[in-house]
Length: 142
Length: 302
View: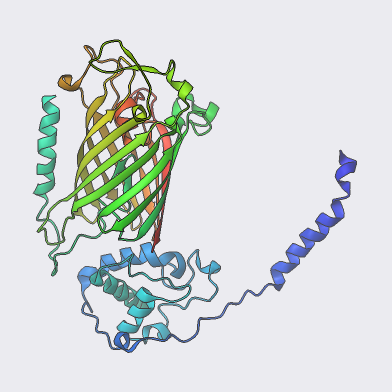
């Protein structure tokens, strides 16, 4: 039996070495997605729940359920599913994210594009959607 | 019997007492998800996903834990049961589904209608749902012995087994309330009917159900259910209670994400579809009857 499988030794060594080397050659650095094309109605959208503390828990709960697996618990883009994305995820606490208006964040979070899924059906109530936006705002202070 | 009727009367009353504990909201819209999925161990919840949702469910129960380490507490025992199911929501608050279960090779067709949803301002303090299931025993013909049956009330005249003899039905009224963001409870009453049973059994069974969830973190909850088949003499065809089904107790933990709910639990019933649990469960949780089980659901929105 030993003699019969011996012929596999060299091919297996070559395969294992090859796989090991490939780990270093595959591109590891992903890039951020391009500019968002935000419709005008969203750019000027008012957040009717700005500063509504009663939504804090709701926002956190919805973020944990729907967003955390990719965006990470602090919004740093380091959730367990982030690695399988084709683009790099921006830090939600960063200035470039936080500088955007609530309406733009709403479009990016709820309507989405490409790897960022649409959440209109998973978070159907307007109040709950703004609770998520408020929670993203709160990540800045954390 | 009296105490069960009393329980049935008290439970909806209890749910109403918390009617004023909710936060004041501006618009009166349905409360945020009272449960993470339409399943709660062996029961249905009043929760139905949004219109256009397809749900795939895997329900699995291992064998009983009585043999301990020898079969790793039932995980490698031969007595496992599994159901694979699909549900679809064609219109809001109405769901249809089908599934196939290993035990008795049941094919089940089911539907759920959430008639009332609890609202945030308590205009409607309770959620009310109806659930119905038709199951077809899909075992080979030779499982049924001689292939002959007696019909109730027609003496010992023998008839051939026909397709409809394989049918069993389960219908249930579910009343639920989300008391706080961490506590949701449900009570229910059900009627089970089998078209064909052994001569020492009853065709009909009425049962009560009590179940709920206690959330202990953002994504995790403690869950339990308790189902009691009632001994009601007036609907029994027997003089004595022979192998009256045992109550089904189960408790476990649920973890949910955006598209999945994962429940792992210990419970008594080896059946998965509700009519089987209410009619045939002989496992007793006080006598080594517990088994480990889990449920996984996956949602797709269209």
